[in-house]
Length: 366
Image (cartoon, rainbow, N blue to C red; front, top):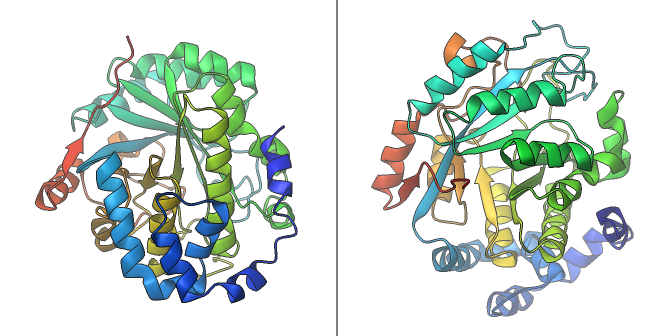
């Protein structure tokens, strides 16, 4: 069975009816359970659960302390190419957008990696657009080979690969992958992905599982908040994470909660997602999946990220640029605007002030 079959179980779920039937007592009872199921998680995402956000946050903090302690892993993204064949209407790298397309050489990649490594970080996330011509698997894996000199953990956030290609990546030294489904509603997905390989909903949906089968150590998933009702997308992201973790217990399954930011093309969010919604999502997910990683990126403001340090997040980006070669060449055209521009040192200082230990390295391949 694939996840698309699991997803079908919820295709007829009447979310609004479900939410109307949830009571305050239901939320209180759920919070008193030692562990919760999928529909309990959905209840914690309901509008009425907003009345209990402080209690949900306390429980999320307790579960995080129990399973992770006062630590926060730091990483930074590294964009190496922005050529893309896809027409995703919300993305700055959209094939139809008029921007300068760039692809780093191996020497430029090493220079970028060296600068990032000087901050002390040992975890890096490689990103590209989708172009077999300009950022083929061979090109990406050559980049990985050049970056192994500087980093002990290299993850990829690229286009969907075949299982055999993920196996090649693992053998080359990649230990993590991030793949955002963007939106789990198949009809909305079709509206937003007009052309290109990414328009294949089912192939992208299955990519995290292919990576799990290929032996990837960590797999990070998520939906881009703002493309559809955030409660539905948060729920289905949680269902996806639960499915993967149950089926692949040896893989570290994590989620990200990315919210739409301004980008080239100017596509506005279809649904506004408020800070309180992000807090509710993260804390509810933490209670549902108490041992799962949660990544909060620099899309969010410094104020919100500081607040969420205590409420379930286990991984944050620092010293971020979303431009190709942005660490060594400075900002050019980026995939999207970031909100929190703090450096690695500034993020570490904040974490220490909150009583947390910033982690620059937590993995070493033998």
